[in-house]
Length: 273
Image (cartoon, rainbow, N blue to C red; front, side, top):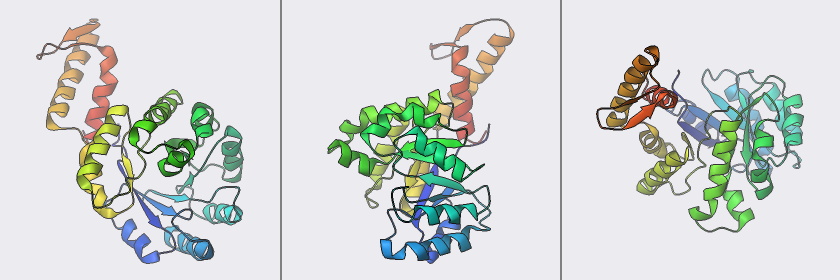
């Protein structure tokens, strides 16, 4: 099992210097943003930079395009179509499976990374996640979702977060990554938020500044204790399964069954084993 992407770095596409720095950064995925990070007057310029800088990026990249309701959407699609097939499209403000199917038809063979940013989108999360085989991931855009729901703290997002985790799993997609943490100076708060998201089933997080990458990665990587336990689970349950035994007790007294094998494999994959 290959190690999953834990750090995804947003960068405004109208700043080619920042795009180049992001491409050289340790982020697992670079997210070139044509949408919220770019002013309307600079959309055309940003699109030109994306086409030039990502044509031979040689690393995992995605382009966040503008929504179909905007005047920039068609040109964004043309720009993405001109890029190598490995470049994914990050789709904001999705509310229906029909939107996903239209984008899949417009960008055939390309991974779609869908963002849900409204109450209606949350309610339709599973239908959106299963709308096309091209959907590679789903996630939340929490700034817009907070506004739509009228919530003022994380407690108001708990159900929506769990809903998208469940929808991703039901659709057999990778676990969703967390939405960006807006305070780039509050690394302790970022770490605590990441740990809470990890407990809910998220895996990884988007960042809006390179200074957030190390904190995000550390929060989502398993501890030495978790790795050691996963090794024991895998060894003991593997032996038990081969012997026809359905469940065992670990040295700490925990009673486990074969359903725990996949979780142990995930922990070891996160640790690079």
